[in-house]
Length: 180
Figure (cartoon, rainbow, N blue to C red):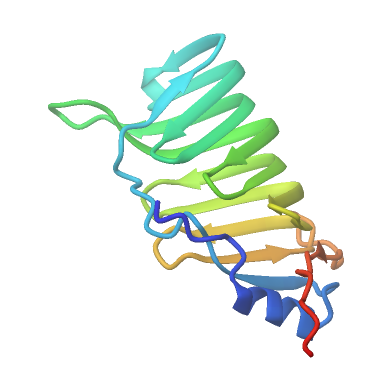
């Protein structure tokens, strides 16, 4: 993590120059750009059920996932893995549900669901998404973060592709000193 803010000035200018209530809104660069998706993944929960025949494990109750500077908390987490002939299982995807909370050093987000595709390095939050960085707050229905490029998009459409919803934002405006 390089500590880049999720909402760079360019994204704010774009959001303020176009109507903030559009169906899809680019959010510029994510603080998670360059996140090491090969770093170890630590998971703790109240319970685990391993479904080895399905190459998955289900964690339930106060689930917490940590990878580098990224933390995801939820009530339920399904990990899909691949088991090579020799060696440890390799995590391919994580699906979180139930009051999902994501934190990085510079921002936080909430949603009903999250999908972390470890292979493609895409993190998606769905359902009542709320994204906060300091005093800046955005809301929508689907937030997609590309961990390679740092590009994030907040969309107002429903997950089922229904009618367009709204993306809303509240941006802090710094106090400016008066010029003589």
